[in-house]
Length: 297
Image 1 (cartoon, one colour):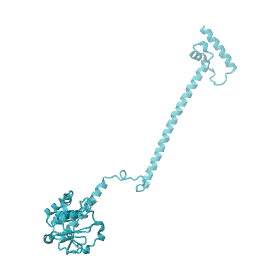
Image 2 (cartoon, rainbow, N blue to C red):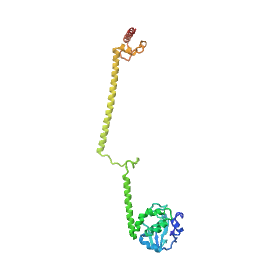
Image 3 (cartoon, one colour):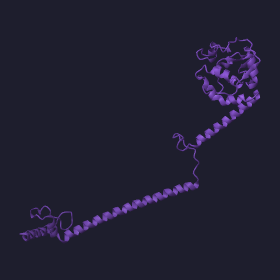
Image 4 (spheres, rainbow, N blue to C red):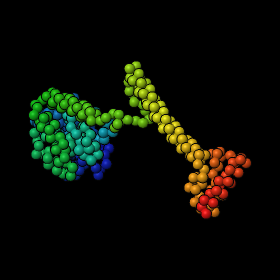
């Protein structure tokens, strides 16, 4: 392993493997004849590389993904530089990110693909999260391990990525099909891009407004008729009352004033006029009142 000291020593998986005796550290400009996992590789790891690993082993470049531009790959010399195919990282720093593998994940992936699955599991077992790497990538690793050459691995990788893109599109379409854009996605600060109303729809709206106006007028007319009818009934009752007083004032006096002591307070204008009494009416009223007292006595 070429250690460029970019990583936190406490989190570096390569250094942990080195402390445990699984990995040896290489110096810059030191040549390595085995398989080298490097971003500058031109071929992909494949089962055909098994013999190289058996004879000379494999190496990784322990550097930060954020500092690839600063990494002196030219000083890491070897004849078998390789790239890893599409895989998903499960380490705590880059969990779930495609291709952002740690050193131990890179070692394990290469061992799985080249047929050294037991060695891969042993390395991963040294980390609590290690077994998760295989459970997440098992289908991918088995597909790559079923190939023979680097070209076949790349072909399988392209098919896997194409299938994932299709699945992603279907998931998006499925999610959108369950959403009502008018209810669930309506932005009150933006008008919806609705099509303009056609002329027929505008006419229908106008006719509905006219119908509503007619109905409203009809209701007002009905209310007016009822009110007018009530007013006429009240006027008729008042007129009949006036007529009754005018025709038979004595009966009215008896009805309203059975107690003769209060007769002078409750005398009603016999003419039905709510204005001032005339002298003639007053004289007639006194005479009728006297006659009423005589009849009662």
